[in-house]
Length: 321
Image (cartoon, rainbow, N blue to C red; front, top):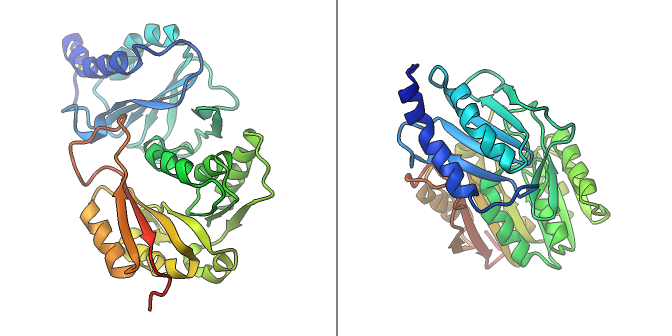
């Protein structure tokens, strides 16, 4: 889709600018929490499903899922620059998710040496050398749920990535957290995230393990009062949700304390909530459904299947035989 006429470009960027003004109209200048300002992927802005805009102060990140119209980036930059300046935002980045490696391009300013995501008093390291910078904004309902119930509890964080759940749990008074991920590099960032927030790690573990092959090592550290399952939907060579999620669910009886809670997550547009609920019913019969966490308002979505699925279960009986 190519457009070069100023009027067409103006019409294209108008919903983004309008949403920016609605979302940030009452925000004061200076550091504020990371947020999604524009969520085209949810289908609420017809014709802009290929564009999202995030803020990790002082940086604005425009995420492009396909090649934009000619002149789009320059027009959007011109419209956003004065709005950015009024909020103390000094960096504008464009990420081309449609290109191999999902490269970033600098539009304005200079990227800080240590760019972080902000969540209230907590900070999380971000990297611009990978497709996902290291902090998922749409997981906020899950973090709020964990925060509200983990005080004094032992938490198992499977597919931990950069351990944002662990940092939140530690801040909310968890008695211990075991983070498991096959990427030692991601876990190293997770350890740094704890340090960044001045958190001791004497009750935090970081296990670089292939979860599907490490049940005995994980089980020895249990049982756990809260289990977090947030796997990738497809990670070549390690995890495919349609093939491997069931294997994880079958193991919950070995890991869960009596009356444990499990947050079951799935971010796969092609797999809807009904699929996930049936998967749990078939493979974790002692899991009692408690609630579905509502999506974050920054991520409006007209499609039931595309959005992140967050389901809470209570383990009523540890005998899955």
